[in-house]
Image 1 (tube, rainbow, N blue to C red):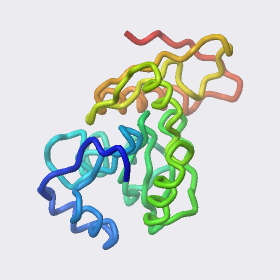
Image 2 (image 1 turned 180 degrees about the vertical axis):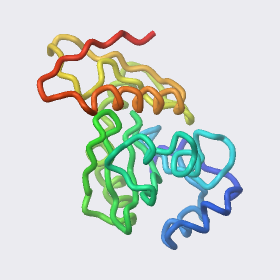
Image 3 (image 1 turned 60 degrees about the vertical axis):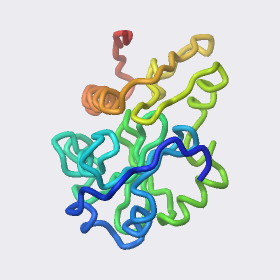
Length: 200
C-alpha cells in the first residue's frame, strides 16, 4: 500500500480478533490495521485504543453500524472505511460497500484479497478518493483519526456552481453525523424535499 500514515500497534482486542476470518487475522497479525493512500483507506485494527481505530467499537459497540443501518446484519464485519466515512464490510467472504449517507449496500463482487489488489491498482476509483484529491490539491492533509466532512452531502443534487465544503473532522463526529443524516432521510418518500442546516 502507498501513502501509509498510520499502522496499528499491538493486538489488544483478542476477543474480536478470534471472531475474524483467517485471512483477515493474517493481515492484522502483520500490521494491526492501517491508514493508507494518504487517508483514502482506513483498515481498522483489533485495539482498545485509539477508539477511532477500533474494529470492535463499530462492529459490536453502542454505535455499531448494524444498529443504525437497516441493510446490515450483525455479522457483517466493518473492516475499513474510505476518506468520507463510507464503509467496506465483509459478509461471508464477500466485500460489500455501504453508502453511509443513504444506507445503500452494494456487493463489490470481490473477496478481501482482490479488494486490496483493486485499491492498490486503481485507488482513485476503488476508494472514491475524488474529495480527498481535491482537498489535497488545495493544500489540505487528512491526518489519521479524521475523515472528510462534505457539505452538502454527496447524495443531494445541488447547482453545479455551488462547490461542496470539504473539511477534516474527527472520525466519531463524522460517523455520528452520517448516522443522524441517514435516520432523517431513510423513510422519506421519493421526491420529498428536505432542508439542511449548514454545518459549523
